Length: 342
Image (tube, rainbow, N blue to C red; front, side, top):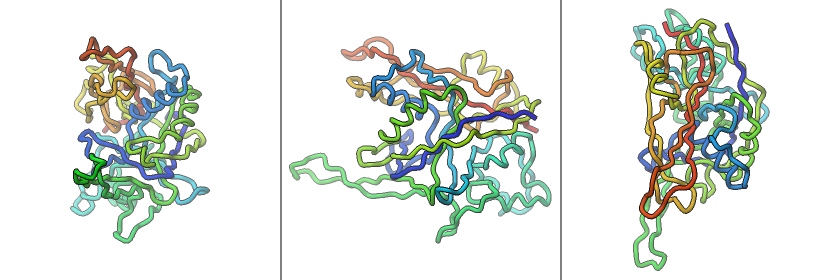
């Protein structure tokens, strides 16, 4: 058995959070933030204060997505969660209620995650693993239960707001809804980092004052940063598959073919792109690219904990009367963990 150590950064939010989805529907918020979004925000912070940004868009480290952690109060020990691999062997359960509970599990705490990486099958036979399921979390930690019986410590609340297009009062105000995320007790989101984190930590100090997510102009997305001791994860030494902890853009078509070489792979992907955020190009769109999502499982091709590349989404040529004069980096370098798939 091998082990790998990651630096851990907690974001304890001091304000509500809204994370827009692909539909750009304010009434629905994502509950996590992808690694490429966080990376872009960090690079943007460095650029805003005049700090030279590496020409290739690489801060010197690889980061995971932002995942949930539960913490009762400031001084208590947090429980960190990682995504359930999309390819994992589940037993045949005779009780339909138990089967439904198992299907809802999306997150596994890091103390149990090594069992998944080793190929252990949860909920097998007369195992009491079913009792470890709390909402969408698999954990030994006792999560708090609210008045409705929910144990989800990441709360979603839809708030009504009003959009005023005409300040003269001649046009009617238009109501709309915003889904805002908050965290129970002292919980929040965290991410892992692998490599040289000196630039990342400098950018984090700026980002916590800028805020993250959308609706920052009304006070959303502000947080405190807490750097923990290194997290050590036990990994199998003979695994022939990887599980992603970050968004992945493969380095080449050849690497993509190697990742998909057998029938045990399981993956999901999404389109990445969006609007350019730097003036005077804010009315222009970046090029689009597809990236694989965390939890995806692929064939491993080498003994490493990081794969992928950073893509430049700068539009080529002239768009209208403008030519974008700088690179627009989308980080698709991912943290991967060896996993045994049975």
